[in-house]
Length: 76
Image (cartoon, rainbow, N blue to C red):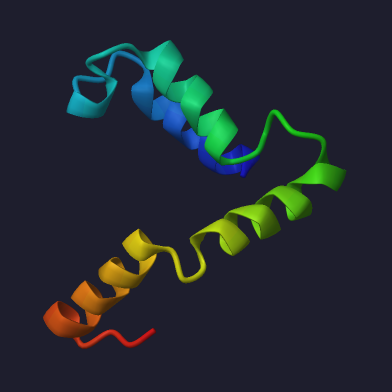
């Protein structure tokens, strides 16, 4: 995860990519959060498990899975 973060950080330097137009610092901070880099390693597994449990059989997840089956033939 740290390697991915570092690659994005290097790519963002003087970047004209639209994803960085609103400001690099905020984007990088959000990426650190999404990659769990600000969280102690012993808490990461529990956080991921919680995310999976919240999304399992959630309306939005179910509809997205149905869309994938319909549009791309990707089964759940």
